[in-house]
Image (cartoon, rainbow, N blue to C red; front, top):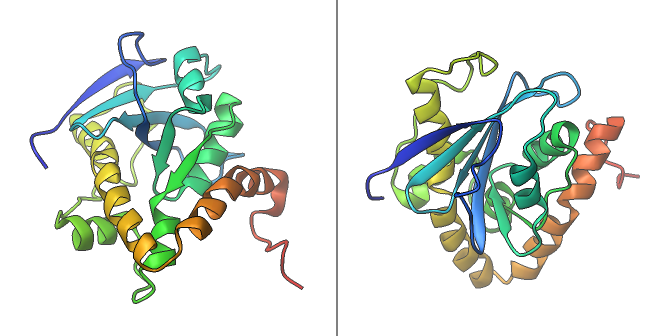
Length: 205
């Protein structure tokens, strides 16, 4: 990938930042339980090497960010969308759609491995070594460090590239429609998580 950069915005996306077709999205929270842990940062990229980092806090106004998440004309690309979609719904009160999840796509077409984390996926498919050093840090701090911001930005720089390659693999294995159906179910899966069914397979016997 060419040179990359990030821009920090407080409270919402500025009106000058828009996306067409698709946007890569990630979130940073105070923990991994949407009911308990608040949303702190939303990272977005058009796949152009620029990440827009929106630092948010209650009462979570962010009207432009919310409008983008709900825009049916823009595909939102996540890695492990199940968590991010639940967090965004819980704290921003918006149902994100439509969705593409690189983790689900990887599980459907990379059946030769059980390593579907973003770091492993980016390393194999794009030949890039992602640092996860700042993964566990205080994202609720009023002032985030340059190291935190650079880490957060790195998680959205590569999702467009992953999607392109994973789409090719899904098509090769005849699983494109299956992936699309799984992506379409994600808002329901997130709603089940928020309703307290996060540790249950409701389809099991």
